[in-house]
Amino acid sequence: MLVWSRPGRIVLWMLFALIFGVLFLAPLAVILLSSLADQWNGVLPRGLTTAHYADVARGAAWNSVKASLITGFAASALALVSGTWAALSLRLQGPALKRLLGLLFFIPSAVPSVSVGLGLLVAFSHPPLLLNGTIAIVMISHFVLISAFTFGNVSAGLARLSPDFEQVASSLGARPAYRLWHVTLPLLAPYLVAAFGLSFALSMGELGATVMVYPPGWVTLPVSIFSLTDRGDIFAGAALTMILVAATLILLLGLERVTKRATGA
Amino acid sequence: MSEALAIGAPTVRKREPGRLWIVPPAALLALLFFYPLALIARQAFLDDSGVANVAEIIRVLNSRFFLNALVNTVTISVAATAGCLIVGLVLALILAFVPFPGSGFIARLIDTFIALPTFLVTLAFTFLYGSAGMLNSGLMEAFSLPLPPVDFLYSTWGVVLAEVTVYTPFILRPLLAAFSLVDRGQIETASVLGARPFRIVRQVILPAAVPAMIAGGSLCLLLTVNEFGIVLFIGAKGVITLPLLIYGKAIQESAYQVACIIAVVNIALSLGLFGLYRFAAGRLGA
Image 1 (cartoon, rainbow over the protein chains, first blue to last red):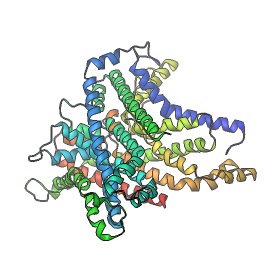
Image 2 (cartoon, rainbow over the protein chains, first blue to last red; image 1 turned 30 degrees about the vertical axis):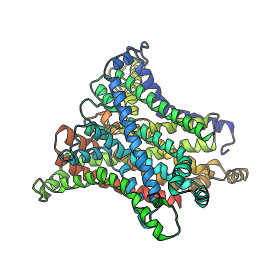
Image 3 (cartoon, each protein chain N blue to C red; image 1 turned 45 degrees about the vertical axis):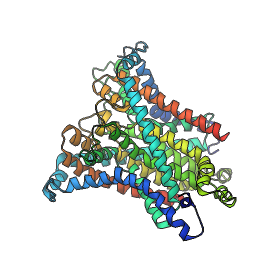
Image 4 (tube, helix red, strand yellow; image 1 turned 90 degrees about the horizontal axis):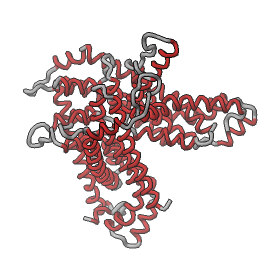
């Protein structure tokens, strides 16, 4: 305990409550409130209604949820396979190459998402690789942006893995493929699930690259929210944002429960 | 092929085939990321006939819209990072050293902001601080003002405040990790010996926090330079940053070459900050 006097502690806690309330709690509460607000002309809305949810459900909401979930799943699954593959095979390289390649796999996380989208448009708008206007280019843009996070998470997990298990498995005569499937990957499982969850969440909220490349008919949730608020329909935008937040949180909590059950923690 | 996975096998001969396993993920990344990046650079420097177009590059780099966006980007990024560092340090100090019931839960709640879309905060700020928002209606009702008195949202400061909310968790996380390693006994001893809390923070706690703040701060600089959703959602005419300018030139004006030239500058800036972050994080790990 750094501050022993009770008044001193209370002052600090009030400072904390003020910062936390203004910066973090108020935005979340207000989004929730506005998604349910009836008429809102004064400080507080005049009444509560679920009409905005009904509106977006009648509109394009379902298609957007579907587009976001499918894109998120496809991009995260591909990123998980490629990131795990990269992290595992990086262990076989010499130290110099390992450093260089490790850096290269991280670089996509440093490049602005809009530029990733621009690059894909420039590269894949002509035959033989004509992807512009397809759903695939949206998934590729998400994959590129989240690949570094998946790679980073799996690498961190590998670094924490005790080498003993793998060595014991080898000395007992386990073939490398058997050892990978039955020893290394199960030990990595919590990190793989966490990596998948984080990349899914990032993909669900991705906007910069998506607005550059999305074709008509594949409007993800963030793009849909932006076009609603841009038209001035901010209450419907708030309702759709709550749907996005709920979908993301349910997904993350579900994955956390799966991990806990699997590891028996 | 399974032989190829012999991790840490003793002889070099056995390791050789294993090294090729890196090729598929590396090739995928090269095709989908580095090749498009190279094409951006090519389109920026060469015109359609393959001749270097220095005149166009100079025209764009000297243009009002580019310089304006560059200044905006750097100002917002530096101000937001400074804000994140101050807010993050205050919150982390209280959470770690003056904990209250439920502080662990609050720390986790702030952490989930990392997983939420960044534009959520901007949208919320519209309801809170917008011209018809809660704060303005409240003040107008209370003091019977004719016009909304609070008008910072559609300016640089609106973007900065939104980015402070969104990126403070990136400072808080490494700071809390660093503070969990600070020896509590040392603090108790210092305070029993009569050191004031301020002196303990300065002499015992801050030295432990500096590496985490440098690493977290350089990550914040990078993320705020690249931020797109917050600026797009605020939609203020006067607040255009580099990513927003690239989007505008490419999608709204179909000026791909101009977009590519700006993108090269933006990517160079981001990669420089990424290098700074890696350097800082590397020293943190050492």
